[in-house]
Each structure stands twice: as structure tokens, then as C-alpha cells.
Image (cartoon, rainbow, N blue to C red; front, side):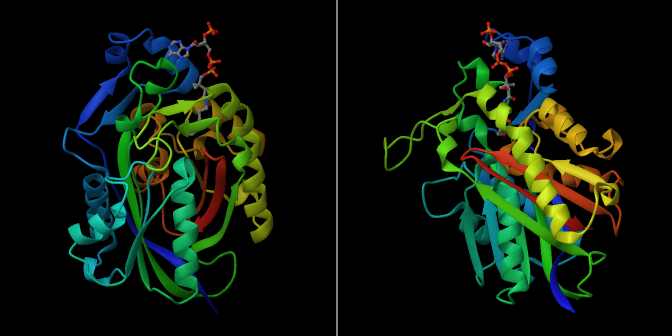
Length: 324
Ligand code: UT7
């Protein structure tokens, strides 16, 4: 017998306002054709004035609790992945905790940019398997629209706002790869690439929030290799093979990166969950948003093997294999 972090339910939230490529093309020197061809993105959601990351996260968390059929008071750990916190401190996770009426257990933020949800899942998994907590909310929530330079066409067309969440519970399982829950997680970072995707401000350096800056081509160049390496690590650690995977739910940065990664790993295109066309790149929120879509439309079924992966600023990258 072994303790595993089993997913009880998931939920997500998207701000109401949709920003289409056509609207962007009316403001800056870009086109729907360029954006779709280079990224697969057609539209993204933008948070309303006064709508913060914590608000998005609370809505996603409530949806996940409802889907799981559990009460907020049963949650004793909240790990919130975000690079766009409401404030420099306290952690946005405590605003979420308070918003849900929870006043026990622990809540903290985790910052690994686009890999944040994978890092947060792995972190919560370790706490649950170690026996420190029993039921966790793992959330990815972002308002990237607030850190975009809307005059930089190389970045502002790529990102959007949103949030997704899962409820995890520590459960005794048989200890085999056929178990439900998180089977393995593999996290990597390499700070030599930190200037290729960063925000040019912060409390300690500039005392400003700053704007997102990216050498897109450089990020692209490394993405597929890093993603596939860490997926191979996950498969090797479990003895599972690509054929065992039911659903590939990647970070939604760019359709070309997703297609190239799936192709390199011989993952069939019909097993790939794609939401980048509708959501854009929502950083730490993109995987739980895509997961929620595939669960709610009936694709993901109990017992299915899911492969999650992400790569982003830092660079950070990681993979999780979990059985639904
Ligand atoms: O989630 C975190 C990880 N981030 C990523 O995964 C992003 C990775 N990178 C990418 O997805 C791609 O590099 C981009 C989508 C950002 C860019 O695609 P690209 O094929 O690498 O284009 P590029 O940067 O090489 O630019 C090609 C051309 C340039 O013009 P010239 O120099 O060839 O005349 C750009 O100025 O496209 C131009 N360009 C645009 N044109 C129209 C750049 N942005 C735009 C735009 N509209 N929005």
C-alpha cells in the first residue's frame, strides 16, 4: 500500500471579456493570420477592471470543490501557482483561503511561471504523500494582461487571463502504475536562461511591477527538447509507455510547440487536449483550464492516464503523470 494524491475534482474560471485577434489587429501592427499561423491563438480572455488573480482563483476553486463534492472546510492545504499575485505580499493564496472561509491549515503561493501548476501539483503531492495534510486545493491563476506591454506585438498577442484548480486527497492505493492519483512528477530549472523570458521590474530591483519581455525564438528553440526530456523521465520512472497515455494535456503556449512535442513523442494528435486557440497562454492557469475542459466535455474518464507538462520562464519545466 502507498499513499497517493488522488484528484477528487476540478474547476476553472475565465473572465467574461474576450479579446479577439481582429481587435488586437485594430490596435497594433499584427494580423489574425500571423497570430493563428505562428501560435494557433484566436482569442484570449481579459480580466475586468477590479478583477484580481485571487478573484479568478476563488471562482475556479469553488467550481473544483463543487465538482469534487467536498466542503471547503475539509481543505487543509492551498498551493497557488501564479506570477501575477494581487500584491507583492501576502501570498494571493491567503486571499483565496480567506475568500473560501478557510482559517485552518496552510496556504502559500508558488512561482514557477508557466510551469507553476506542474510545480504546485508536485509540491502538494509531496505534502499529501508525506502525511502532513489530507486534502489540498492546487490552483493556477493569472492576470497576465496586467504585465503585458500592449505596444509589444511580439508578446501581447500571446497571453490571456484565467484560473483552474483541482482538489487532491491523500488515499491509500496499491502501489502500482495502475493506481489512481499522481504517479510521478519531474521538475527541472536552469537559471542560465533567466533573461530569455522575464518581467523587467520587481520590488527589490526596480520597485515597479514591470512588463513581460521575451526572446520568443530562443524560448521556442529550447521548448520541445526540454518538454520531451522530462516526459521521457516520467515514463521511465513508472514503466509506462506512450501507448498507455489517454490524454496529453500540455501547457498551452503555442500550438506549434505542442504539435512538435507530441510528434517527437509519437503521441497521436487525437489524444492532445488543445485550448490555446480559445484561451491563449494563461501561464500557470493553462493546464488546469485545459484539464477542466476535457473533463467536463467527457473526454477524460475515471481510470484514464493523463500526461501533463509545462515549460516556461526561468527556464522551468516539468511533467506529471496521473491517473484520473
Ligand atoms: O509559456 C512560456 C513559454 N513561451 C513560449 O513558449 C513562447 C515561445 N515562442 C513562440 O511561441 C514564438 O517564438 C512566437 C510566437 C513568440 C514568435 O514566433 P516566431 O515564429 O518565433 O516569430 P519571430 O519571433 O521569429 O518573428 C518573425 C517575424 C518578425 O519579423 P521579421 O524580423 O522577420 O521582419 C517579427 O517582427 O514576425 C514578426 N512579428 C509579428 N508580426 C505580426 C512578431 N510578432 C508579430 C505579431 N504580428 N504579433
